Each structure stands twice: as C-alpha cells, then as structure tokens.
Image (tube, rainbow, N blue to C red; front, side, top):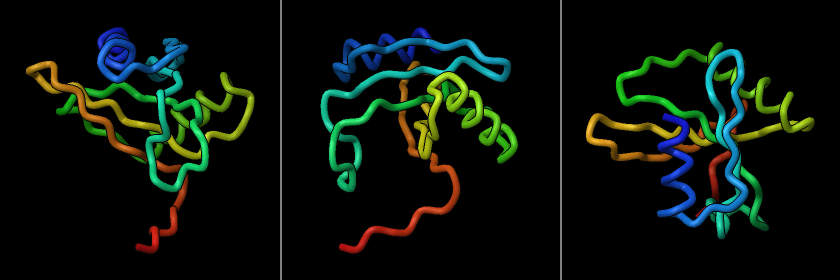
Length: 107
C-alpha cells in the first residue's frame, strides 16, 4: 500500500524525494510536494504520510506511535501528518492529522 501511495504522489501529484520508511507499526511515507498544501503554510515543507485502508480503525495511541516513529526518523518534531486512505477501488484521499490541538483559521 505504501508503494501505491508513493507512486500516486510522484506521478499524479508531482512530489519529489518520496521515500518509504519501514517502522514497527506501519510503513511511513515521506516526501516534498511541489507547492504548499495548506493556506497557512509560509513555505513548502516536507510531509509525512501514514498509509491506511478505508476500513481501518485508528486509535489515538496508534497516531501517537506514528508521530514518534516519524520524529525518530526525522530527528526533529513532527507537528502534522497526512493520512493517505486507499479505498477498495484504489482511490486515494489525503487528510491532515495534527499532533495536538490546532487553533482554527480566521477567515
């Protein structure tokens, strides 16, 4: 599944430097998008992704472990990740997951 996500990021979304990291809990995908992903981002930043199937059940503990694994590989704090959800028809959708609470944007 991580390879499917890597392929989608590289060929459809034009990400660069996309690497799969194998961890105890799951494979993590790391790469750099061609532009910012969120309006509040001041500059392009590398992103961490967690592959998941649409019928997976995730707990807060599992997310905490994913953040810790990514921080161990990165050697620095990771404040957000993207959950890359693969559906049965191979469609992939991406959702931000933040470490802790995030103040809402002002419009």
